[in-house]
Length: 235
Image (cartoon, rainbow, N blue to C red; front, side, top):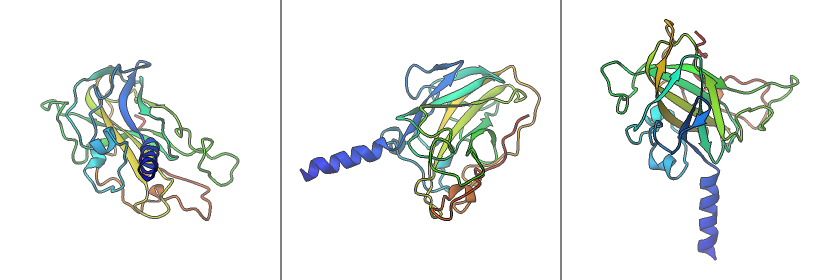
């Protein structure tokens, strides 16, 4: 009986977390997990766990295996990710892009250093001017099984890693309590412009544990929220 109860608790905990194993391009999800999305470490790909240490190199793409495929999309297209089990905790969902150098293999390139720019963000919505809550009315990505953003039309053509990041704030009353669910998809971007995306940031490095966007106090209620990281580059 105790063993069964323990197993149920473990299963419930794993179910409460999630991962992003497939991309959605041109309105169609990929046919299988971990194709154009780099397979994350087993703590996420198998156990649905998140990242709590923003200084970890897992903040780039959550470690894992080299990529297997590349999805071709056009600048200005909507690009998305499937959230297996759905996004089970409230908080923002953000999207970063990093251009792969022409002389590097997209399947194995390590996106270290200041190479990422923010391309999209699904953050808190203020309704009625009152306190923000932990429900879907405040957090549009909460409980969604798919999240997406529009690639800025002026992003130059080329190969890119696209990083999806869901920040769970349900345990973030103190620094270090936020959980981040991260994955990186691989794309070939066509029809791009001549913009200069930025500012460029590094993972780890872009966030600090005590950033206001990584803390959600129980009291007093928050009346405003700004997600961590730079502003979205809109081209």
